[in-house]
Length: 190
Image (cartoon, rainbow, N blue to C red):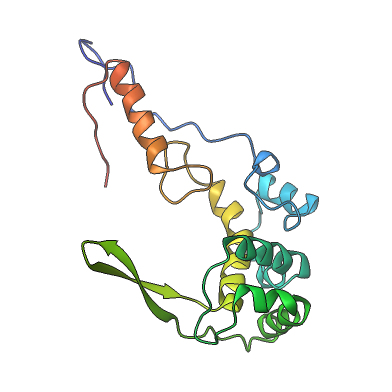
C-alpha cells in the first residue's frame, strides 16, 4: 500500500514483512500436550543440517490423539459411513484411540469414504456436506496439531487465510485501518 500525497516512497526496495517473533511457546491456539519443550525449542531454533525428521510418531502419540479426540468431541458432528457417532465413540474412546494409534503406527490406517448429506440453504435449496468418520476426523485433527505449528512460524503476520485465531473479518479490519490511515491503493503480488 502506498500513502497518498508523498513525492517519494519511504518503503525501501528490499523491504521485508516483519515476522511474528512471539514464537510457538506463546501460541494460545496450540496444543500444549502435543508439543514438548524440546520440540518447541527445536521449532524456535530451526533444524539445521538438512536432515529430515519424521513426524509420524508425533501424530500417533497418545497425547496427540487424546487432544485431537477432545477437539472432535467438542464439535460433536454427525456419524460417518461407519455410523459411529461421537457419543458412541466416547463410550469406548480408549479402545478406538488405541486402534487409530496402532493403524497409524503400522501404516495400515486408511480413511473411510465420506458420507454425503445435505443441509438446507433456504428457499428450498440445499448444500452438500461430507461427513468423515469420527476416527478419520481424529486422525486429521492429530495431523493438524502436529503440522500447524511448523507451518505457522513461516507465515507472515499479514496472512489471514485459514489460520488459527485469524479470520476474514480480521483481514477486513486490517484493510479498514490502512484506509483510515490514508492509504489508497494495494499492490498484490501473485
